[in-house]
Image (cartoon, rainbow, N blue to C red; front, side):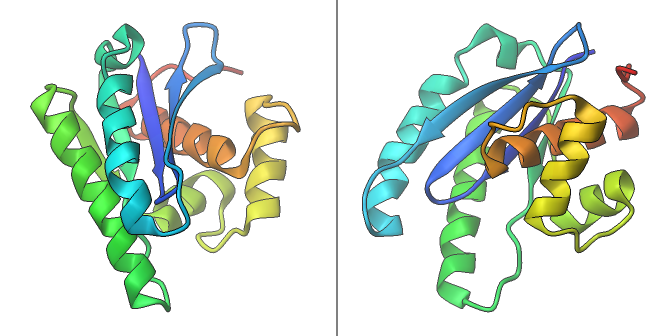
Length: 158
């Protein structure tokens, strides 16, 4: 059962698609520009194109990371706009999804809801067999997809 995990931010949206072999394929939409407002429409436009990928259309369920409640209200609002736009596009395309807090997937997978980036990367390499050359967003999206596999009862690779 193909499950996807999405790590969205104001620079790029990374989708990890679980594969039949137990690995992950990554789809990436990227925005350019110094300011979040300048990146938003091109980023969302790229995501609209990305959801046409048949592999994404075939997922049984998609887990989308909920925007974090940060110290900077502006960045929280910008992040929430991206997540809201992604959720609307998924709904329009009929792709079933749920929101998940980063603390939830980190606690379930790693045992620490406040796991930092180096710990998530190390866990991903050790437990998901991912290479050391990926971006943090790719590690996060793969972890979100693995979380989705666990909560939906999907098949897990050894």
